[in-house]
Image 1 (cartoon, rainbow, N blue to C red):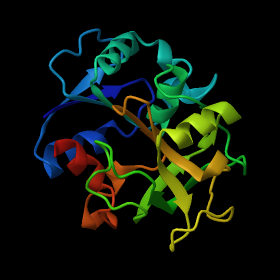
Image 2 (image 1 turned 45 degrees about the horizontal axis):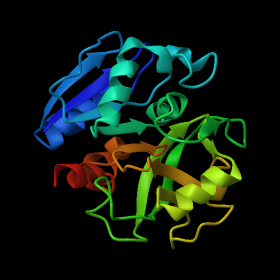
Image 3 (image 1 turned 90 degrees about the vertical axis):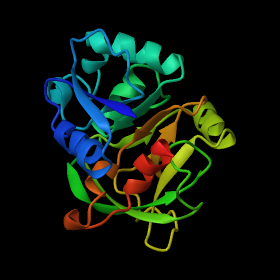
Amino acid sequence: MKFGVIVFPGSNCEQDCYHVVKNVFNQSAEYIWHKDTNIKGFDCIILPGGFSYGDYLRTGAIARFSPVMNEVVKFAKNGGIVIGICNGFQILTEAGLLPGVLMRNKTLKFICKNVSIKIENNQTIFTKTYKKNQVLNIPIAHADGNYFADEDTIKKLEDNNQILFRYCDSDGRTTDDSNPNGSLHNIAGIINKDGNVFGTMPHPERACESILGGKDGKGIFESILS
């Protein structure tokens, strides 16, 4: 497969994503500058983490208007596979490719640590190598990871099995104490209704090699490749 990793001013995880795709999974990968308007030939587009445009207005709000995003929207609507990680997830919500918003963490502080998340739906192109209810240990690093949506949107996400990850404890229990940022229903990752656009606050690209502390994130990329 050919992966495109979009680079916005302020991105800081593009090299992590590129390294995993290129060196861990031996796939073709290229960086895509945010002003590019041609993303033809790619099979999967990754919007990496970071602080696009400094996140000074609202996380992802300015990046959503970068020229490349018009092409990402078209790519997604034509069935292309899109992954947004952390800031990338925020950009996808701002662009309307995923429902809801990401707000300030309940602590009002930046959080950087490993957390437990549970696989809620393993019948997707992003999670099919995992088992349902499997607990993963994945890093987070965000200040605005508090997922919020209105009741109707949450119901649709639940009814359509669009929630892929929930924050949980090491035994898989979704408790308030295991929720690091205040996200509604402990939501940590979702997909769109068509199942080809995925947003996650935890960083799977940081959990693909033993030298970094674990490989629980590899399944995301293995699922796509399979």
